[in-house]
Amino acid sequence: WLDKPLLGKKVVLTVGASYEAIDPVRGITNISSGQMGVALARACRQAGAQVDVIYANLQVPLPKGMAYTEQAQSAQAMYDAVFRRLDLGADVFIGVAAVADYRVKNRATQKLKKDGSGSPPVIELTENPDILQAVAQRENAPFCVGFAAESENVLAYARAKRAKKGVPLLVANDVSVAMGQSSNQIIMLDDEQETALPEMSKDAAAQAIVSRLATLLARSSD
Ligand code: C5P
Image 1: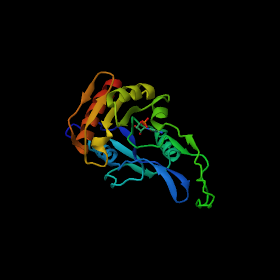
Image 2 (image 1 turned 90 degrees about the horizontal axis):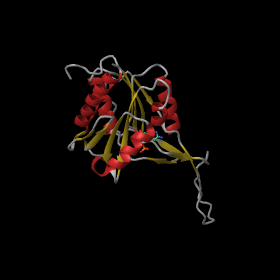
Image 3 (image 1 turned 30 degrees about the vertical axis):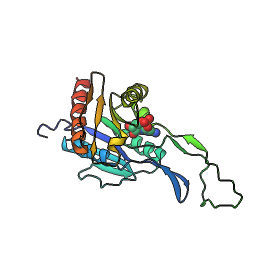
């Protein structure tokens, strides 16, 4: 990247998959290797940004050169870590992490045992905060980039998600192509255009996202 389009910008990212405990040894998580998020963190750094990563359950190493990294596990822990970083000032927030929509309400402090009664334990769920939506809708929000991993009706769901969460740039992908793979096929949706890219490496997709992000960010601060 010769022109460093994000030079001097502060970027906060969530990466990986949240984990919601049921008891001390069991939990609910999402499938996300963290590859796309790590590729984006790297691309932002290469574009000149100062990058903070809040990560959970990564299956790939964090990229070098991050300004700040913090491990979080649950959605609530991620939410708290993100807002602490945003309070220090940020230009961009990118939510790449697969975050659980629900957490366990009746979490057990001791390991659940089979009690022999034949009736399985009931796990009650309660809603987690939506980190991306909360960031996008806060006063003086940073420029927000969200993801929509869909298994059907990709474009329709992505358009609805972008509108509901109030996110200027949303990246949609079909999970059947991307999951656990090193390549991805994305569609970028913003106020001006919808750009469908061919299947490419996650690093190349990340660079395309950062290019578009930098263009929109420069325009929004004009
Ligand atoms: O609604 P859905 O989970 O499909 O939205 C995906 C986008 O929202 C991703 O960018 C993800 O990181 C973000 N998200 C979040 N907090 C949640 C749920 C999703 O930041 N609790």
